Length: 143
Image 1 (tube, rainbow, N blue to C red):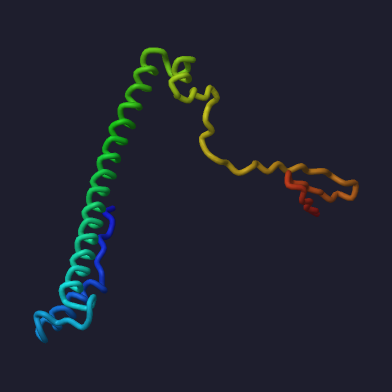
Image 2 (cartoon, one colour; image 1 turned 45 degrees about the vertical axis):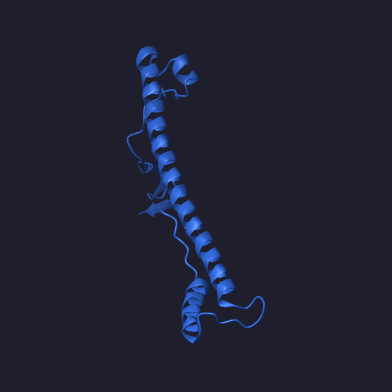
């Protein structure tokens, strides 16, 4: 994402103000340092610095874009190198792990989560009542 370029409300206001003052007099001067020439010089200094700053931001944005492209290229090349090691030595080899690969798991994967199975135990009591106990510990009396 490109960085936002900077503008200056102070600069905008000063530019409008100097235009108004020029309409009063081209050589408006109040004292040694308060004159239109000095005012314009300060406006130009800020304009130049602001322009330079915005140019640097553009240059920085370009550099960031180049770095991101180089990172993509290196990531792709790195993956190809690791896959080449895997092709030559196998994904379970010591060489593959040395190159940064993760060893394959030898156990089988579970298909999915299943609910625990409930087992029911029925016990007959001497009074011909059934007591049924499920695996979660609940007992049910059946007559």
